[in-house]
Amino acid sequence: MNTIKLNFTAYTLITAFIMTFFMTSCEQDNTIIEDNLTNITNDHTQIAKQRFELAKNLSLAIQEPEFANALKVHCTALREDGYYETEFFFNLEKDKSNDLLEGKTLDKALTETSGLEARNNLDFLYTNDPGLAILMVNEDAEAFNTRVYIDNGYDDNDPNAIIKYYENGELGEQLANEEPNTITFIVRESEAYLTAEELIMENPDNVTVVGNVNGQDINVFGYNTDINNDFIDEIEEGIDMRTCQRDNLSGKERLYKFKTSNNHEGWGKGSGEFIFDIVFGNNSSTINTLRDRRTGIDENQWYTINKIIITWSTTNDLDRMKYVIHEDDGGATYNFGITLSGNYQGVEVSGTVGVTLTDDDDFVGEKIVEYCDPIQNGSYYHSNYAGAVTFECREF
Image 1 (cartoon, rainbow, N blue to C red):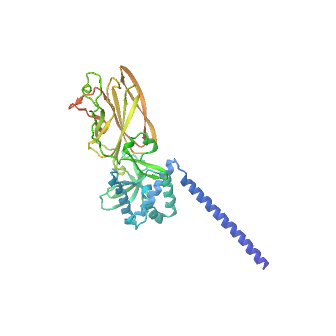
Image 2: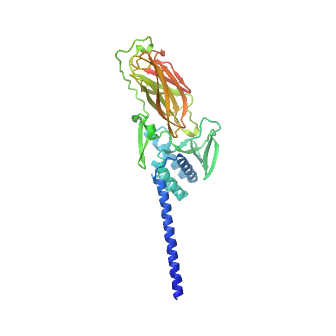
Image 3: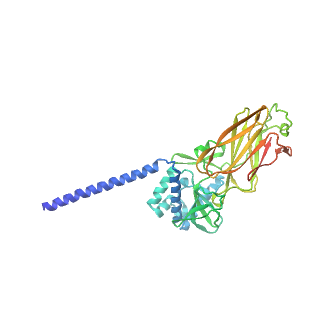
């Protein structure tokens, strides 16, 4: 009996030790996971990896028609608010119940399909990827694509570019110019999303906060798309009398309208987003800049901008402006310098101003507009060509 009791006691102690070690290990593992999920990371490689993981889990879930239709409903929901793109911000929508999923959320449906793998993935993206979106293309097609694609910065202008996808959980790839003809979902960072760096360059009247994720506001361009046609009659006193047609007009210089023959977007990128950076010298020899961003741009269609710049006078201002145009494709931000030279009160000056762009943006073109450029029809200047873009300036 003593021997048995001793063995039982030893067994009990060993079991208790193992259980304590196991529980401690689990707590440490959970702590490591929680630390990784709660500390915001700037590691774009890790974020890209987790977007791939989300695409994988989505490709498993869309095997059920109800889930695919639920994604479609989410992608079209923002249209009523005037949003230009057929997409939704995943982290803002994933916890909303959906009737097509019997009241379950996207989060719940994904974790039921992929388990703990999806749980860790969703938590990481919620913490670190506020601009995460699901884009839908070919909305009117009859069938759903069994592939979920990842826009991980491929070059849509390169005919040899490769786009990756998951199909039923298996990774594959294809040429990016092979456009599908079915309803297709793409995991990406929304091109309408503005990082903190980009937000500095934008007009806050054209930016909407659509929600907050993990304490981070989701700033989006593209909701306030109404054009303001309330023209302003601001006559400048004492405009100089050079022999230029502009001398005979009073009012503000404006970027009035534009169109493009190439919106620099492939099928997997959605609509075009064009950035105009206008560089000029106003009331001094200092170089200044204004930005105008236009979203939802299709090809060969005129879009009215009516962006007020300055009341342009060669007495007070530089005698030329520069328009630099990019198409926004997202990515990491960087500073881009624009140099402008011209004549200010009889003196040749030159200066450089920095603007914020992202490393996937496409350079479209640039154009110098001179004060003495000719005026057509008495109210606007000749068309200016910058790459695929034609734009008009007016003064009134």
